[in-house]
Image 1 (cartoon, one colour):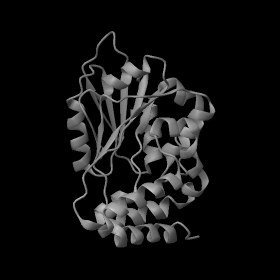
Image 2 (cartoon, one colour):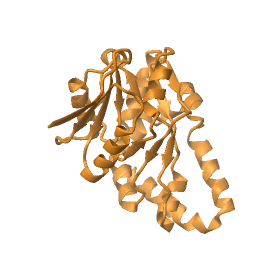
Image 3 (cartoon, helix red, strand yellow):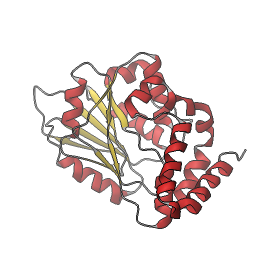
Length: 248
């Protein structure tokens, strides 16, 4: 099914289509409320609640969209009020894909803090000029996870320009539980082995400020030196991921 909501059109502002795969209705409603506060006046919102993995839902949503720009948003991601306006302004400078800073929901339990320590905080890079997707193709449905990384590989190989905004942000209400670690490690093990190198490409390193696996390990080590109480939990989480990712 497709659910569509339009916010007042404006003649001089290109249409932005926002495609949201829906899995949990309560989170999707929070996402939609944040979109109602957007300052940009020409937005088309398409929520997809049909069966399928995120890549399949995103692709279906794209076929129903009409915008000159398309932003693929997850239901647990809530935008600050000027986010769409800032992305459009940056894209109008000639950029084809726009990266946006992410703020993670603060963890509350010991284990959720340990999980958060092991994760890198990369910006959201899912705001596309429509022509880019028409040229390189949509998301690869064989990836249950990491489909966003794989499509960025094609963006870079085709020499499209990635811009970055810093005047807005996205709040990510991500689940930080062992169940989530197991799910992502299990379903992400194949794409992790196939395209992990993508995050170390110079263009993405420039945008994200990250330096690959070794840099992330150094960051974790330094954090644990300051807060050794989290050493047992972090070692458990990293060991769990290591084992699960090697399941045939």
